[in-house]
Image (cartoon, rainbow, N blue to C red; front, side):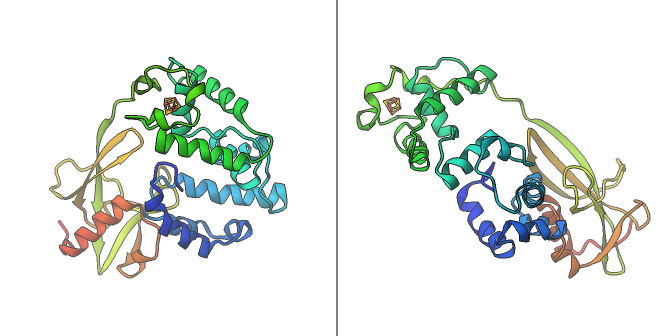
Length: 289
Ligand code: SF4
């Protein structure tokens, strides 16, 4: 849940999630719509789908027990090197290279590594450097300590070197110049048109098969001439999306399903679409063109 999302934002979602799916078995047995419903508002829904798939895989391959092995964890849907290492170190207290942004910064400075840390060579270097430091016991505490060192002492700006417990081993003379990163991918602006189809007190929505697979969304429409009644701007991956909503008559878009206003509160709808629906419902834009 904390990928791309702050801990403060995650806490209430995590608590509701754990109440609904307290065990791997409960999550594996859950309906996908219920899983997506509990993720609603967190964004990046592939994480919810992957957790669901991973829970099913743990039931099938590991008799319901999460494995404490890097390779077995990485073979599960949605689990990459970082998450696998975090599970092994924090849940099983076994050595594993947990390299988050804070740890990457500490390691790059400690070794005065002057290459991009987000390159293939950089990642390999950090992984090996983190492995070299792992203690035989107490890996959970050690990895936590390294993360905290980066967050509280070896900060991106103004690191507190005089107070640093590993100052004697640190090779860099210019900590603020490190780590080096490749230039960021440019953000691309895109505009998409969505239809507001309301008839007889029901709103007509499409089941997404792409970005928000399994969730209900305002349907796409190709109608340049229609006046825009609502705009939602939102970021997703490297895109900045301008979603323009236009009123469309019933039947103008195929394959929709009608929902009552009560029902839409209970089905999974991605946040930008839900915001648009709520805003338009409030302004009572229910007439046909
Ligand atoms: S001595 Fe300074 S730069 Fe080096 S690891 Fe410690 S806080 Fe970071």
